[in-house]
Image (cartoon, rainbow, N blue to C red):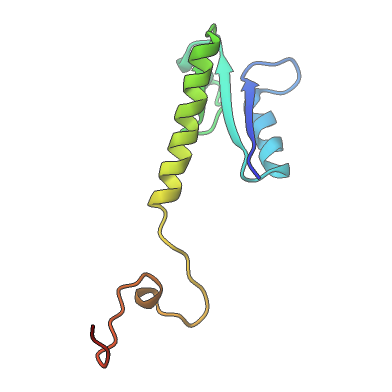
Length: 107
């Protein structure tokens, strides 16, 4: 499944980073977009978000929000394309990744 959540950074009882951690605990693959009207250096100084967190500055229009969500989705797709294939068991990585050439076989 896919989950995209938009969370404000500054809230009364928990900050956005804490809410994001709780969301990811229940839904490990969740993608989170944080929003804040505070300057980035204030948010960083308070250590409210993890390094590299996706964020958008308030106020924003619906079009700007849609673009930011699209960027985040495209970034995830790029990460998936760049990820090296996983293998398990006794299969050598070169065979799994298609680089193995059997010396007794030719085309």
